[in-house]
Length: 368
Image 1 (cartoon, rainbow, N blue to C red):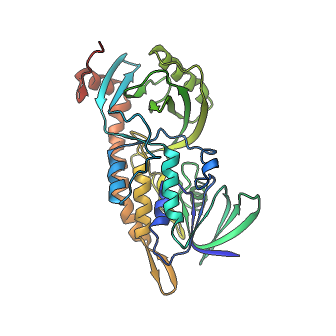
Image 2 (cartoon, helix red, strand yellow):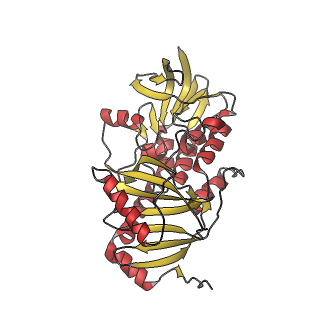
Image 3 (cartoon, rainbow, N blue to C red):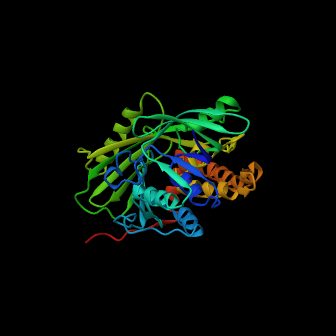
């Protein structure tokens, strides 16, 4: 019987940040389905994510004392967004200060940092299958990479397992269900025959009430869309590709395709930090921007916030629910403010007015 102080389901930015910042005496297990510590299997379960660090995420990276290794940075680094509004048939360019990254390498670097700690164990290629919470411990059934099924025990369990979190599902079966929007994120990688000097954001209600994107990465471009979960996701994604083709993008030969569920929180009440001996961080907690779909900054901050709520006492590790809820409060407030911004970005009337005003847009020099 294997026992830990903390079991963390999910080795992404939230889970890795927590594991890396635990008090030094804490014995922790990180369970992740991917093989982020095995170079030859690194991309087997690639996350559907555009891989842009916005200014907020960059600030959090700085606050945590992190740096980006060369293998995380990808070319090109561009500084403009081309916004295409298919309702109004207008387009504008805006300056943006994103950092273009390889999301898989970013996650791998964070997990390596956590795994370097002497009392942190990482199980790659492993899946949490069942949870049982008792008065003094939580047990988790795990299917390991070898196919072996084992049960591990921890004083606390942390769900860092993203939008489809089985840990969150367990918490909500026992108590209050937090309403939250669910979207299907589909991405395809396509050849990019000539350099693309900007990112692209498209808005078209026939595709989604959220947004779609094109991101250059090396000699390829990533096209993707966040589409309300439902039976017509594929049809809507096909419409998105038709839209891109009408603007001169060749999307006829996808090199690979990935998909995932992403969440879109409401104004208030979609975020939950868990209950009892179970805590939630990152997107499993509902922490993701409802206006831009940015989740890395929320993941890093919530992981660090939960680590700050832990302490080591004579009898072992203890977690203050009150301290963690206090750490979550500014994140909840940020989501509430971004929810107020969303109707302007995604309501076609307001968006058309913004485009017509040319507010904050930049003029592009014509090519000779």
